[in-house]
Length: 264
Ligand code: 5GP
Picture (cartoon, rainbow, N blue to C red):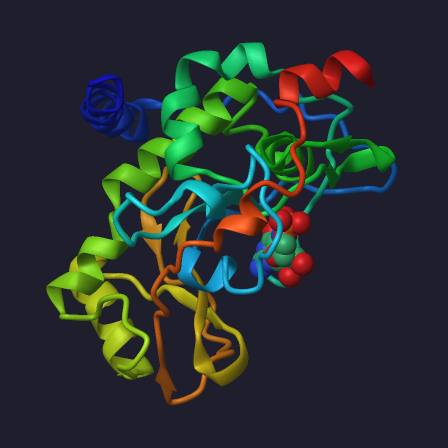
């Protein structure tokens, strides 16, 4: 299977890259405001059971609408260059996302990096684009001097995602999707720490549903502790994913990104 092949290859290639890639020359352009080089990366992962909770409209690009047969697992939100003290750079160059450059990764991107919305997302300079375009243009263009090309941005993010399987780490501690169980937030931290020896950052929504789990990496892709600010209550949950009802499935369809680009 293509995705298995990529997954295995990515793990090997990533391990080699992680130990051998020296920082390259800085060539990131700053657009608009002064932005300095970032300090570390955040790999932000979202929980479909939470992200899809309030989705009522379906379209071919909305991952909530065709997740039914997929396992309950975190999916990718983005890889975000960050500043140590506070904040993050954004929209660092004028480069625009080009689907063709990542076409070999489509199968994995569609499965592991789905959008959970319909319609296009605002990107830099008031452009509109797909979820992937938004992530690359807003965050990926700020990866210099470590990540300089869009293929590398998407490849590296997938490789990190496969190498650090957060869903499995939680399952090891019996923390699984459930509409009835609550888990101690400290147990969730402990499960991730025991798998990866680093503290994640966890964000929660109403009633303590876990929305995102984030892992932090230095510029050589070694795991580091994320900042310790807390947004979750003492007890949290990982809601199950529920298939959308049939009438919602047909309401609106938007063309694939490649068609959208053609008509813009
Ligand atoms: P987006 O998908 O637009 O990148 O981000 C969605 C939400 O994630 C934002 O409203 C913001 O709260 C949070 N977010 C976006 N980028 C970053 C980032 O680089 N670092 C952190 N900590 N949060 C971010």
